Image (cartoon, rainbow, N blue to C red; front, top):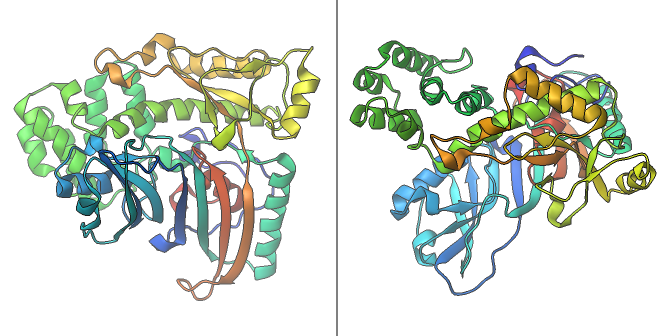
Length: 439
């Protein structure tokens, strides 16, 4: 089975396993997707930060941070968290706030629980975690129970033999309903800040609710009449409204409009474009039959590090005829990982086959290293990294039951643990092989 057009549009062009998919759907209800962050706790000391575990149901991280910011009367950029979580999910993660514990503990937000508050002299930053534990229900499975079990076993056995699954960036990186985050990033990288702003505010997708599509069409039609566009903006479009408010007061200040968005979302645009390029490179490596769990000459590998580090800025070793056997032994033992480039200002290509793949993808996009310096908004500039191409899978297990949402169907509950920066949906697509909207 080949990838769908929607998946291919974000670089997910191939599957790693050949077994038939389960189909089905995740997130029929938010409790179907449970994420428990395996956290790195800041030290418990007297300091200006309160660190607390935040459990949330059906809250997207940026929206939740905005709610905390409003209620605590602090800048949203002063609120720390290690990773962005899905909205339609039950999630648990650490957050830090530059206020006293009592102020955090007294908050009452629907669908949000706060526990374990303590003071620290250090706040949380993106990446301050080890990984995530997942419990996920795949519902509406129509095959006989025995066949479902066989398909799950077939895929899980293959992945165990391979040592993991392709470390693709999942659909959440780009948007499930509106998969355009990387397209906005590409516009920014190409220096088209106005185009990026207009693409974010307008350009409706068929998969969006009708009222949102209508609002985006009116924003597009308003062109430079920003007051009219703001009037058309749907109340749920908080970030679009913020951009339009800025443009009403400072017409055609496109960089300023972008800067009205949260810092982590702004950086996500660039990262999403880099992720798209990486996905295309990884897809091509798989398509050419180049292994992910073994090296070939020219590959750049990294020694395994603590806390399940999956992305690297330096310290790579290039595979040569002299060291290939030794490195392959290290890779087979899980002590080293093959990498692909997250292309940026300081990136170097691999050699050999992988280097050819990396160069071709970058060349077909018509970009170069210097494009990732963003003069209009220098903080968005990205030096680039390398990312391991195979994600190890820990603690995988499953159980089957009747589907309480769809009584004539079955439900598969999958449990597993992934390193930070790795996507559960990139694993689930190997089992499900379903349309992107079902993730």
